[in-house]
Image 1 (tube, rainbow, N blue to C red):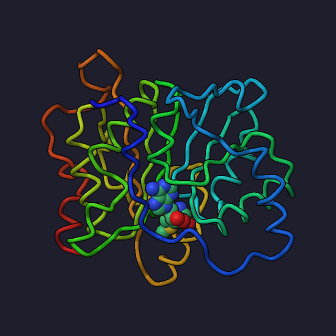
Image 2: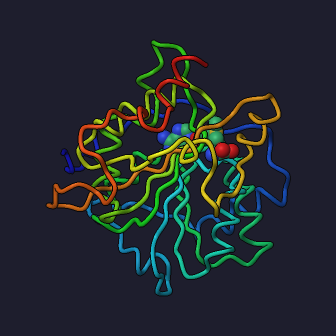
Length: 263
Ligand SMILES: C[S@@+](CC[C@H](N)C(=O)[O-])C[C@H]1O[C@@H](n2cnc3c(N)ncnc32)[C@H](O)[C@@H]1O
């Protein structure tokens, strides 16, 4: 697992950073509120001090990558005031939408990295993230674009380093090719496992789920999203997770593999 930071090797961000011109109120939030909430990785290559970043003690830190317009992150932050939230999103219009929710709901527990999450991960301290979300990430359907997908070996190494033992990695998508890719990459990674034992584990979202904008759009178009909840294996303890059946191929017991083949 490569955990060294090389500031010269920055990943290339695909996708847009700007949409329509921001309304003056939203632009004011970008100019005035964002600088107060922005996480800035130390230029020296060290790690961030999250206690200082949140300015108040937090029970846990949850990370959302590609929060879009921030509905999911905003709702979770409001429901869990004792948890610190880090949201990564390079699309400025989405950042402005989340800032608007932060201001109107008086959320004090959200910090923002308005850039590529892969640049932030090396600057987070080891084993600090209790839950990570990558919801409806761009599926990059064309084969020649697959290497742009967020879930990949390097990113999983970086997530494995920052996630606590037993932490949850939630991934959802309505794109079957991307779901198959995620299952293959995450279950192949030695730090993660998928403890799902039945179809309800991926057909239905977890009980505390907040619907995202892309999820709503996908469902309107008739898609059936897949919800995957992986776990970060405890460090230095290779024994099976409670309930894990060693050697079971991903998706076999739960029927997801078959569903992906036939859909
Ligand atoms: C398809 S949208 C989904 C947005 C939101 N999660 C939802 O479900 O409504 C994917 C989002 O991921 C963001 N994104 C893409 N690559 C990213 C990266 N490397 N780091 C952080 N965000 C990224 C994009 O800007 C975009 O807003």
